[in-house]
Amino acid sequence: MSYSVLSNEQVEQFKERGWVKLAEGFPREVALACQDLVWERMKPMGMLKDDSSTWTKPMVQINEAYSHDDFQLCNTKRLADAIEDLIGAGRWAERSVCGETELVATYGWWPVNFALGSDKAWDVPKGGWHWDGQHFRHYVDSPEQGLLCLCLFSEIGTRGGGTLVAEGSHKIVAKYLSAFPDGTEQGPAIGAVNRSHPWMAELTGESEESGDGRSRVEKFMTETIDAEGVRLRVVETTGSPGDVILCHPFLYHAPSANHAGTPRFMCNRTTPLKDRMEFDRTGNEGYSPLELSIKEALSL
Image 1 (cartoon, rainbow, N blue to C red):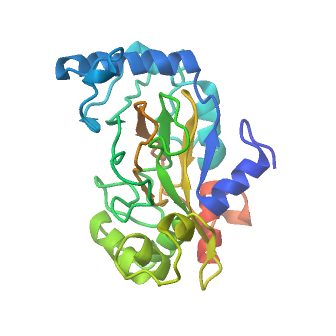
Image 2 (cartoon, rainbow, N blue to C red):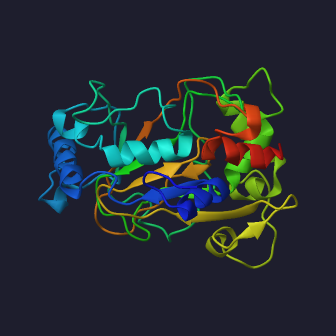
Image 3 (cartoon, rainbow, N blue to C red):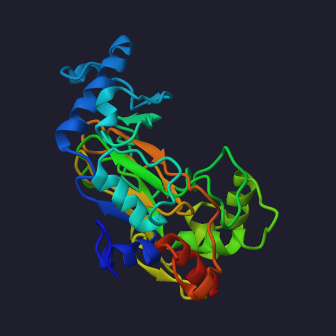
């Protein structure tokens, strides 16, 4: 099958692993201009771009979303088409392309990671693991999220504070949510998944880790296949300004420590669907890769 932006290999990675990186989702120069706007917002806090001696906080959380003209330039056709490669053409409720639509997209919130965790050895954390969606009730066919897009506004290298993703975890969450036709709240659901799956329980600290002598980095960043054949692994996402990590809405992810010595700028945006996902389309045609990933997890 052909797609507008993504390759067949990238789409298969999304279905199997739960995420894929879109290089240059928007131009690098646009990303850096947006980064400068966030720096301006931090000036009253005493954090100055050109003076590293002012970077006295390991993390600055800016709970704001921005819609300046500079941010609208992030709404490229390349990014919109890549999103619809995964959720289905015409199924994005708020498709926004600069110069083509009047929709105004917002970008936020901003956890600016200067040096979080740099005082300790870099490790795979136990805390912070979740999938997104505090603001709605969760169903296996929920339309509210679509995809989670992690938008990069700075260079993020290895151990530079990139978001950690738990590959394969979207399949575990799909199976869990399918047992709740009346839906469930996100918080209790995350706790239940953490406790019910052995690998997830060890990852999130809900159970004691098996004493095999391996570090958490070696244990969780090496692929494991669970009893149902799900391939699980923690991966550190990296990239350049303008890259976008396209994540399955059920994918577990967590913040990581920044040992790079340079601040990490990124934010999230969602891509809500017009309608609920469908897993029984007439003639078995028209399924999006997002729907197929869930169908395959549920063996439908």
